[in-house]
Image (cartoon, rainbow, N blue to C red):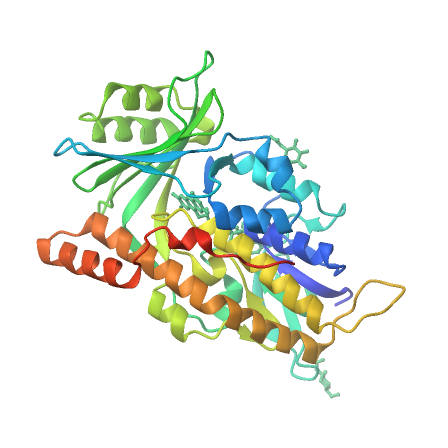
Length: 397
Ligand SMILES: Cc1cc2nc3c(=O)[nH]c(=O)nc-3n(C[C@H](O)[C@H](O)[C@H](O)COP(=O)(O)OP(=O)(O)OC[C@H]3O[C@@H](n4cnc5c(N)ncnc54)[C@H](O)[C@@H]3O)c2cc1C
Ligand SMILES: *[C@@H]1O[C@H](CO)[C@@H](O)[C@H](O)[C@H]1NC(C)=O
Ligand SMILES: *[C@@H]1O[C@H](CO)[C@@H](O)[C@H](O)[C@H]1NC(C)=O
């Protein structure tokens, strides 16, 4: 066991990169261990970022760069195909839809060179019995001591297992996503369109004047035999499913770039498990989906991870003891205290986001009028302002 890294982040997704960047901006060096062999900027489609997410991106110093990559979205249009009802709602705050690639590349480029180490898949974490320092063991057999571990390793988080968090659950839905390019420009309004029919939902957001992002949420079919790894099969199935949707939706799916087509199960950490769980142990904690994977029904999962990064780095920097000439060093007691504060400051925010997401998802899938009614009542009672979640301000770094 040679290396003795101070702060180790597991996973170079949105939240791992954002956390490394937030720490870097506070003068705290970290290393990010990512299992894939290179930056995950070739797959994936796009992500909607609302006002709260832009606040976090501003703190990370990358909002201005990212604004150049996507147009602002001004309103929501919600269409119900079953009864022909159309609802238009102005979008509060800044909303844009970013290519995942632009977000990942921008965060990565803002980091000092060699912050991310690729091809490092974490296998387990243990506490060294003598020093109580976390020992990270990787798939290739190597091990390192770390002073601080931040698990940003997504829905199947090994760090979350180490913290004894309850397993994540799956919504009875799945999601298909893609990007469609219109070489001569699309003529769609700068709006977030949602078209619903029974328990199918299609969303469409323009990224710029040529590119649009779309997703389709549909009930999960048990014992599904389709090969969801094959983009052409995803396309065929989605076209079949949406045969009763407007022609422009079908055309959009026909021209989707196969590389961007993906299928995903929708995972969540139950809001009550979030409320009860312990999200740090000593100098180990989690952020992003590893902490609070929540399903896409509010489009807040990624932004919540950006907020985590800002709050975590702020607390760590406040509690650290500082070496004047060199980089800031953090003491073990300082880190424990900082992580307790971080979890305390994040908990109710992510519980509320997850609960609203959960109820919104359950409403989409509700099989009976009674279940629908219960979801609506709870949503109205608990979330009087349905878009109140965008007003959250994670504060300054
Ligand atoms: C259909 C859908 C639509 C969505 N839409 C939106 C939206 O509009 N707006 C929004 O804000 N959010 C949205 N989200 C949520 C958002 O995508 C996630 O919250 C976000 O990507 C999570 O980022 P993360 O970095 O926490 O996790 P991930 O992106 O899962 O990254 C985890 C990283 O850790 C690595 N890793 C995992 N295990 C290990 C290991 N053992 N060792 C080393 N590395 C490891 C992985 O390779 C990966 O790079 C959506 C999600 C879905 C499924
Ligand atoms: C992905 O990121 C790497 C590292 O920044 C970069 O060299 C590469 O060009 C990017 N790939 C794509 C497809 O943009
Ligand atoms: C812990 O300390 C004991 C006694 O000093 C030593 O024999 C043992 O190898 C140490 N264990 C580890 C994992 O370093």
